[in-house]
Amino acid sequence: MGKSSKDKRDAYYRLAKEQGWRARSAFKLLQLDEEFNLFEGVTRVVDLCAAPGSWSQVLSRVLIKGERVGRAGWEDKQAKEKLALAAERTSGGVQVDNVREDVTPVLKPRENVRIVAIDLQPMSPLEGITTLRADITHPSTIPLLLKALDPETFDPTAVQASQPVDLVISDGAPDVTGLHDLDIYVQSQLIWAALNLALCVLKPGGSFVAKIFRGKDVDLLYAQLKIVFERVRVAKPRSSRASSVEAFVVCTGFNPPQGFKASLDNPLGAGTRLERSPSMKTERTQPYRVTRPDGIIELELGSEDEDEGEDIRWIAPFLACGDLSAYDADASYHLPKDHVVLDPVQPPTAPPYKKALEMRKAAGGAYGKTKLG
Image (cartoon, rainbow, N blue to C red; front, side, top):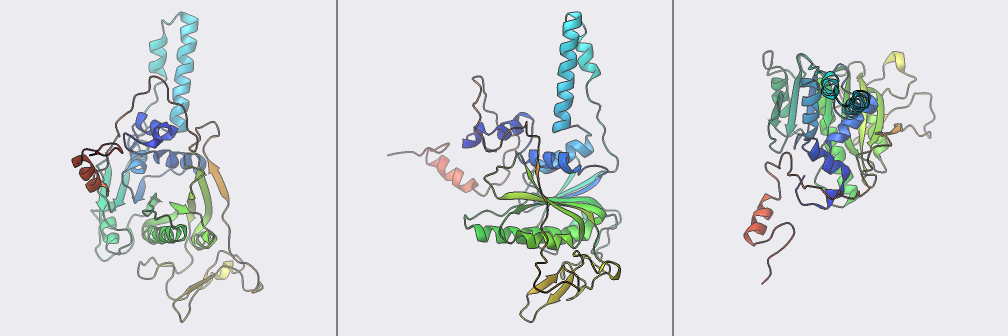
């Protein structure tokens, strides 16, 4: 979130700075929570690809501080203003201050909250958040995560959490190249890494939320997720630009097949073949995993009685999140006359373009201008 940008008229960009969020992506998680109630009963969360920390910031304010944010906070503010206006009309403004104090929301922090945030980039600290600088695609990250979740009961030989978490979220995406097929492939591998890590720490019934790029073969990803989750849905928050191919897959009801054991060496399977559950052979969600001689892994999601020519891919339902009365992320709103450009809430700690900024500053340029002559 820079100070000088073409996004200055982006409503969510400005609202993020006005409300103290580190990035506009905070509204995406808030709108997903409004639609799916992700935070209900949640006390243990893992935030993957967390930098600059906007999603961790939402978790900190909702779970640790007990604030009502997003639409709930907006409703509280509206109720407060209506009561104050009513008191002003009936009593000439005498009791306005008392009314405002009476409707001030009470903080309801949760007990025994544990939140771990992981990213390759350094992230500025947040209250109550344990931050790790690690690579989620590397197996060595699992012991670090397990130790951060349960430092008192950590077992170096364990591959699963002694106290599993309720929710795993990931807002990670690769540095896009503009080659859409390549970008979608790299993003799918990032999701695969996030899922493999989530399988080691999620409790039964837990949830998994991750950013995806919707491409022509994304339904295969949905089918793979349906193997270990009861419900898989795809959501597009209103704060996510419609011109972007990004969306978020929301998986709830973690329920791996019988005999499943989490392993980063052999993800989504206890061997080269994972048999169907005898009690659920007729359902599409039961996997049949085979590794071909050329190394390609095949997943069959249909029943044994189905015709071989029938399409057995599973398509996840698509939902739009966010109230229609909210701002449109693709619209450009006029700035008010008294608009003041705010500084970023949390400037990047180690941006990849840091050297370029230093060179531009040394050359006398600033905010897109270059020194001539």
